Amino acid sequence: MDNKQKIAFITGVTGQDGAYLSEFLLKKGYIVHGLKRRSSLFNTDRIDHLYQDPHVNNRNFFLHYGDMTDSTNLIRLIKEIQPDEIYNLAAMSHVAVSFETPEYTGNADGLGTLRILDAVRLLGLEKKTRIYQASTSELYGKVQEVPQSETTPFYPRSPYAVAKMYAFWITVNYREAYGMYACNGILFNHESPIRGETFVTRKITRAVSRIALGLQDKFYLGNLDAKRDWGHAKDYVRMMWMILQAEEAEDWVIATGKTTAVRDFVRMSFAEVGVELDFKGEGVDEKGYVKACNNPEFQLEIGKEVLCVDPKYFRPTEVDLLIGDPTKARTKLGWECKYDLPALIKDMMQSDIKLMQKDQYLKDGGYNTLNYFE
Ligand code: NAP
Ligand code: F7E
Image (cartoon, rainbow, N blue to C red; front, side):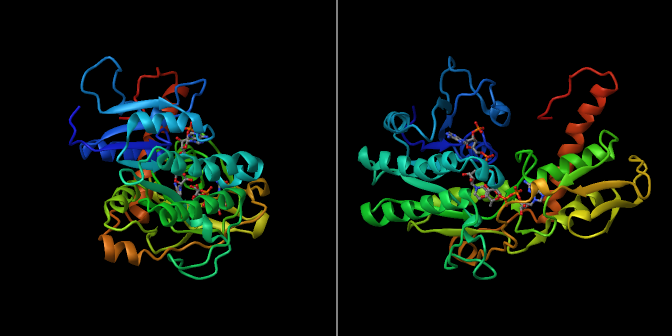
């Protein structure tokens, strides 16, 4: 093994950010170790293109079984790997699901972070290993200030956000108590073609693609008024790395500085396939209809109902408005977004149309020969 190569340990390697970050670090010449929990299926779709057979020489990408709820596993792995950098991305990351599984969320997302920090301390790696903690704009919850910056007070509104609040402060505490290089990246929502299918953006781009291709009639969403500051995950994983290269360990807000309502994300996604929408009604009675279809490839009837509201997607407590102020990251680290929202939506829609064309092909009697990663 080349001693000059940096070693990174990524928890949550099978997730959206874990996959992009692995790709990014491998391109930079890192040796990457990823933590993957056992599941009854492979669940490695997002990282299959990086996989290396364990029997080949000079590998630089390794997967290890483990879980954020198991200290014995985390301590052993960190001891074996001796990482220069740990990116703690593993989490039960779905806000609505955290209301269903609050105790598990607290354990994995809150205490899981403590387990990583304390493993580094116990192993005497405080001066060697730098730690990135995946903090979140959900900490701002019922926002106390607009836009939100590193100094805005937190007001979490879900078991997920409360667990992440513990993780935020235990990271700060270990930095101050033990002089560890441990940072929080307070990242606002970031999305991509490999975003989990139950987050609102991907749910929208998948549904719009299927409707355009005639595979589905309509879809259902919850709160259309919620506003989010959406960026592209590729821009955000680059920033995770930049945060750990900074001279001082600090906490950073990463955001685009623009906010958009869920309803407008729907409108923009349909516009991407040449379909104009009309919204009528209010609250649970609001619906989206096709106003015009300007793309001869997709024949959608004018007046067709394509979107309804289903209150089952409402949350017991909602985060209404998020908009971040990334001035510190821009000025001190020189970070810039390459993707704006229209570019993000284009990327997601192009990918989902391609993916759904595979379903259409199968429906029409074709064989499953098209590759997801084409
Ligand atoms: P994601 O796609 O949901 O991925 C989460 C990863 O964590 C998956 O690899 C998952 O494994 C793993 N995981 C969950 N529970 C685990 C456990 N108990 N032990 C080990 N691994 C576990 O999330 P993401 O969007 O990439 O986000 C990455 C991190 O950033 C998360 O901590 C999230 O909370 C945080 N964050 C995300 C955003 C965003 O907008 N994406 C914004 C701010 C912060 P499986 O594949 O087995 O489920
Ligand atoms: O919801 C509304 C929903 O689930 C966004 C995670 O990555 O970002 C993510 O959390 C908004 C909310 O993301 C549906 O009520 C309406 O207001 O896509 P989401 P999130 O809750 O913002 C933060 C930064 C994280 O840290 C999290 O890990 O959209 N919404 N209708 C809906 N949301 C969903 N999921 N499904 C709907 O049908």
